[in-house]
Image (cartoon, rainbow over all chains, first blue to last red; front, side, top):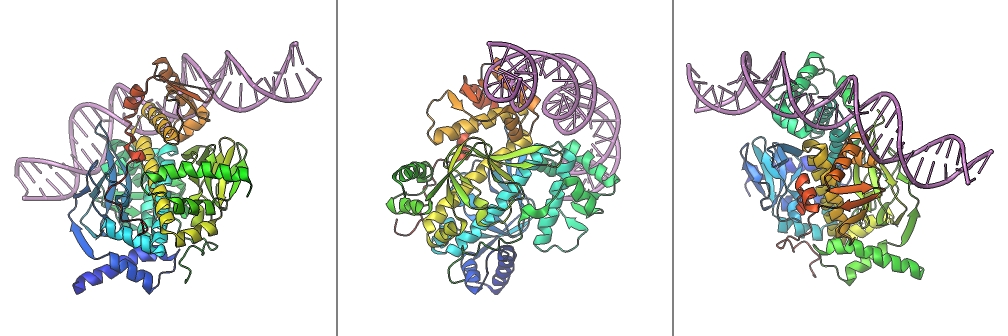
Length: 259
Length: 259
DNA sequence: CGTTTAATTGACATTATTCAACCCGGGTGG
DNA sequence: CCACCCGGGTTGAATAATGTCAATTAAACG
């Protein structure tokens, strides 16, 4: 393995491990397990479809750089984006179990991701309870995001949804270490935002312009400028608790006994 | 353990194991593991709140009889139901990891469920890779339902959403062994349906009446009569593939090596 | 530069919500 | 037994939210 690759690898794993560390003790042994699995770093150009809708899953990926979205195309031409994977997130985890994908997985930006062969990851899971626990945590976390999105789509107005998804993205970017609290690079068009929020492009645009006029946020050229974060969070009814970065203190049992 | 309890236990476990069996070989050893964990069968009256929104999680439950819904109450009085647990489903799985619940878990009917103490389940998971695999499968399955709900809420009309959720419930009931293909007991009010679909009660009512007039389905007094299932599925754009009851044949590696 | 894609805006159509009234059946207390 | 009450359910009319269409401008790109 080339030195450069190893360096990258360490960086990536750190993003993921940092997130998991709030819940599980990440020691050298755990780290070694990750390194053992994450060998093959691949690059994809923006726009690449990793798995087409209805197509066969290949392997699982652990995202190091870039954004990957999971979306469904409907018969009538509409599209719904179900979730957005950021660095440190897994992509196509379902490949462990399912043969075909109900969704399209595509790269919004240039992407670098570790390829985790399904059989190798499966084997590691059957051997390493700690790894299983970590993936359980990852799944639960992802599930929280979906549940919250359901609440948004079901019971929040277009304005609230917009505010909410922005709050969520901001928080997630902060968690993985984006530092500037007022400026965020969000590589998405208004149409893609509309497809996340389940509204039309036109309405998306009007909502964003309104927020800008009101001095809350401005989103232009994939740059989000947060002028009044408090106002944004109130508008969204945002409570970042569902991102779950606090540990349940009485749940220590579920680790390999030696920890 | 009383004999009656043991009988119930076998029944329950079969519901769950039947679902898992499509993916993992369920032999006596696996069965024994389940029995080891499922000891305490509890009953709840309809209306019981198992976990209040914002409250502390207790243990995990495995549902044997009855319906449990997970919902969010918003500041403005609105409610969104995120998912519905049927017999064979787990309830409050997040109790393994998170300390407080973002949602309310409440019983729509009288309920019987096995209490799985979080620490005991956690211990079993750290010992038994097969169990971890099964729970991984359960999570993935649940995640598919949420993803599909997001598509519905985002990009389907009230009419389509209604048809879709009915198709989903019908399919899920069939999977766990409800036999009559034309009549289903669905213990929910129109208001609760509305809170699943993210529409108003009034609109829910009008949509149901329309379906009835058209001879598609009729829903009265918690009884769903399916008159024209084909039409219902077409209206919904329903493809039951996302329920994932087919196994990925080349994913056999992820089992304890001895199988 | 042209060309293409994304963003913007106003006018209008559609969908869904809210409000308000009424119905209907099942308790429940007199 | 009856009157009442109450929680769904049902319906029409008015209102609000959002979608669609179409035309225009701005930005991105070779």
